[in-house]
Length: 209
Image (cartoon, rainbow, N blue to C red; front, side):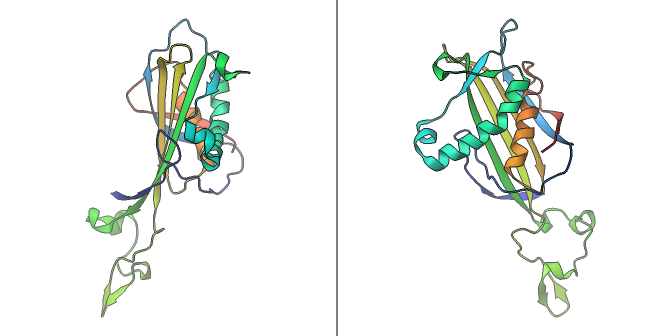
């Protein structure tokens, strides 16, 4: 079991941390748990889009940079789903709101009585620190076996009416966190558009980043 240690805010929908990850050579597969909601009209084409930003995301330089990173990450997924950028946001068919978060989790050894087995380590390992004569204990290391829960969200609204037409979420976990993973997660979230499936299910996408 893992205990959440912190949550870093990135956008209005959720929180995120944009940390560097080790690059991967060649194409690889990213899997995510995806759920989607809404009622996209069966006869409606994807059409044009524009991003919907909060005033703080427009007027605060740091927030604007983070939002731009999200928008750049989702563009390939939107284009694959059939959307094209609008020349003017006031004439776009849909407005898109984005969110992302990365939550760090630290393992707690006493959460599982068999932790030393499934982690493949011995209690006498120097990594756990010296406690007393003949005793070794848990060493407080902020990066020891840390894992990350990563998630993105996409909301599509009709620009003219403001009606929410489609909402999708994608998440996965791993030993790293970073902006390189946002694109694949957005791709997974929109991979089945316009199909709606509220039940969380696994979706895998190919990426070369």
